[in-house]
Length: 496
Image (cartoon, rainbow, N blue to C red; front, side, top):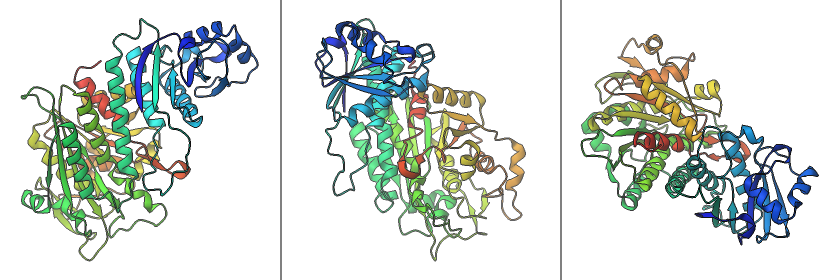
């Protein structure tokens, strides 16, 4: 989809459709007021009839409105005018774009930037309009023999604004497009089946990204990891015929001496649970266990597209977790790259086993901060559901930065404790630690396990088990937390 910003009166804009916000009690946005004047009050009369529910995202399509150059006019509900927050704004934009796509509109103008959003400015509104539009029009149909949707796709969206607000919004639009494309890239990777999206495929995607976005990319093979002593990561790969990979991507946009932010993404391309085999029901969704890796790739794509003046490194440990004659067994003890030994009590707690070696590997970049992202625990889903990601950190300032980025991007996280008190649950009689701590506080003990490998740098951990994908009829990857991570990097780069 192409985007542009145009300062033009909505009634004069020749387009397939002009979409304008309306609010509760029939209140009109500035753009809707201009249309209403051109149509001699027809919009007001229609709204008085009660045909449009004012809740955010509701729509009403009108045809042949007198005095208006556009073929169609779309009225879009944004809720109460004085109570439009981030959610209401995004819901309104999403509803408008969905209605335009459902109507088969090829080119349209949306006058949403003029809406006053609580504690947000026009740059924020522009960025989120583009991101939400790209997320809403996303479809994954590349593996279907025939597409069921014969409607014309929405190809060009004009973001209409008043003359004064149009100045300085181009950069915000570029950022919004970059985030939206990064999200959709991560969704593509997540939605691919595990027979296609293997560790080798992720490595090739990283290389392609490096070539197209001028990133430095390196891929370590099994023999390289053996030399580094990554016994924990390699133990997970033992049951699979797919070779493991350790992928790194480097965006060097800041000064040479600037310490980088390192993003570490869990890349289990399929998780059977290993010898501790999962139940069959919904096991197909374990293709999404590489969503942490997908979010790192999507974020690196967005950061490079924005040319962020910041040094960023992505580290992706990736393998399958399969049962087999050579698979790791419950009771095995392995030695991590850090030298710490781990008693594996459950082979389905494998994400932390690949992440711990990746965290140790990240030390060589002398990071300013490290954030790991993983679909780590079902316990986090029980604790927080599918609304917010779980956040753990060993540094309060870093945690506050991540939380703030989540609020700004509306890709929210909630901080949970990683106190030393929980470490006792990881005690082992035979090794330095066990890889599980029992049922109580499962997401916390998983984070505490990782914390043992992150003592030499500022570290945050995002458990995205509940937010990385949707189940049921709307099953598919969400691309989260690409918006949060990208906003975090933007703030670090000094972009307000």
